[in-house]
Image (cartoon, rainbow over all chains, first blue to last red; front, side, top):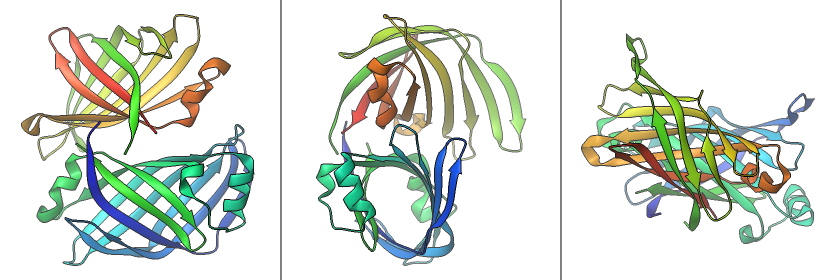
Length: 150
Length: 133
């Protein structure tokens, strides 16, 4: 599979909303308070409000991520991003992540599959691609390295 | 990004059900009549009954939304879905498969994300699916 770097996305998170035990698992919603993204073809900021990650911890210990974010490029285009993802790893690593410690992202699986929608002609290429990302859960919020699937 | 081959999936589709132009785009449903899949770690057949719900968007691309059931050669059932993009003008046909199974020997499928490289062959669509490492 060939890929190329699309952007590095850093998001900052607000206080999580712990929904708790639901029939499918344990649900937590984490609003995004902001962030930024930068890549060879686009860069800008993450808009707070309507940007959040809807998390579901499944019975098998895998965390499902369902992120929606609105990106605003430095030339004013709005881009809607959605990505489904999975995060799991050895219990002690996941516990360290949960405690907010800095953990080597190579020690756990944190991958997402972003899709994009925009009306702006300069970024229409985003409508026509699928992407994969590797995540790094930092205490201040996750960093996603997003690659376009070629 | 690193990946490794998961399976080669061949789908037999039957005559499309052309829903026509709806507020969301031109909708076609391609029923899946069967097929096969093969990889190092799993192989088997595609059960009839699934399909690909395809939407032709205003920019000339097709949005794919597939659901099928796979049956491995040792009798496990795997629920597989993907969304994806088919952009014939740019020879781009990529999907994002996901898997769900209750069979312990295939539980690794519940924990991975994947990318499919699609190709339309005379006998039907073929997807080379790679696990994202």
